[in-house]
Image (cartoon, rainbow, N blue to C red; front, side, top):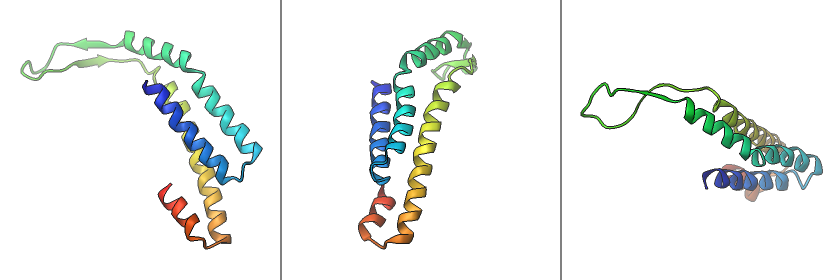
Length: 119
């Protein structure tokens, strides 16, 4: 459920950015392709998560009175799934900032100011 929730939230951000860019087909194709590669890559991400979980190694607790796990080794393979999400979010933020700065110079609409201030 967590991955589906993240994908749906990203879809909302993409739809908002698409609306801010006045329904530009170029923006829709760019963000849609990025979202599709992230969303439909869940199988690959699931595989990466399984590989990460298998590679974890745990050692004895340094303090027996404190409950929890003492991880001593983990794989860096999980970095890939977070990088794809980070890249998508960075593109959305940059596109929103570019459009916001352009619009703020052109108009002094209070509605636009609220939209960019509050998201």
